[in-house]
Length: 79
Image (cartoon, rainbow, N blue to C red):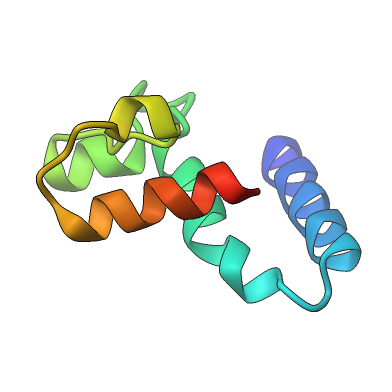
């Protein structure tokens, strides 16, 4: 529970510093949160639900033939 509180505090700090653009950060923070390994199960939520762990960095998504993935990569590189 302590770890969850720390994560929530960091997320709220991110929102506080980016009050005008906080909604654009939601997909990325959700991805990072859902890719985080659970101490009890030793799996991330994404691994449990879909069996996959989606990539979070632009280099990992480079060269995709998926236009939406390319759009996300370009947006991440602009930050």
